Image 1 (cartoon, protein in one colour):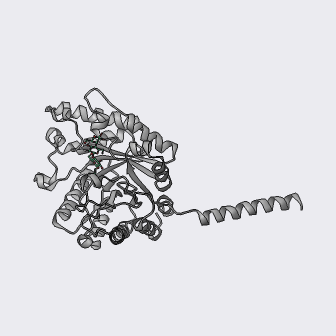
Image 2 (cartoon, rainbow, N blue to C red):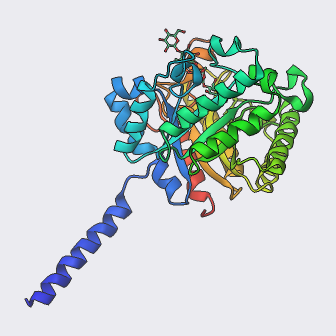
Length: 361
Ligand code: G3I
């Protein structure tokens, strides 16, 4: 056989193997999302990755992006006025670097997880310098390493009765509504590469509080855009409930279109589906949960400006709901794509199907 034929044979064998390997690579949430130009990932706590190697391996195989569940929150990284603690956040950033994952920053300014020493500030100027210093230090430390920052989280809270539906946080008390614009501007200066996100919950259902909140969030986004605030995306947390009767696809689709019309991207940032109140038997409730993932993502991914789907946890082995909203019958809650044994559930298949049916980004 001539040398040239040998080379052809080698190339064609290599080519065939490559095609076959692509044909037979097991699908994962991240591979199917990536095939459509989308990003799939999950929140996680550092301890899960440090103490559970089986889980860490599964996380890398299913996720393209990582959101720190708590490690970048103010009380964790800046517990005292003159002390920062980046140990756990550094571990997660290094984990994403080592495993070729994207990293989210969650979250810079939030009413929750704010240490007492912040609440003791009464002077506006002091409050402003503390906010600026925090964001400059935290965002600056990871400059170029963060895909997107939840710069401000949950600033709208209707029952506080404030103008514009603004939550009565300490930041609003100290700086007024401008704290939101200021936070985005400082974050943008500290890392011009990162996508800057306003993140909030209760934006999904056709019920008065969610519909009212959608209007208030849209008004806030319009105000920020009009001011020239460097905001790039809305984060819709999407902590869904088991009663899908409240989901009105047409109205939710319109909300997404309204956000996109402001020139903003949209990230589904904390998706999970509580099976609270559903049947005792796993089979029954897993099907209901899977159907809710399908119906929500079918609408969400129809909006081309939706760029990412991130679940708040990957496996039922680790979900905030088991501590914060446990099932009344004492059985394990099953809100996520993988079960507690890290096996794909019907929800995993629903999400895969939603990515496969999504339009190419
Ligand atoms: O790790 C300590 C443990 O050492 C200690 O013994 C225990 C005592 O209470 O606390 C543990 O820390 C808890 C931490 O979760 C880790 O489990 C904190 O108290 C608890 O407040 C913290 O709750 C987090 C919550 O945000 C408040 O920050 C949840 O994990 C987290 O899932 C939840 O996530 C939020 C998003 O950030 C924003 N959107 C809503 C979402 C759900 O509430």
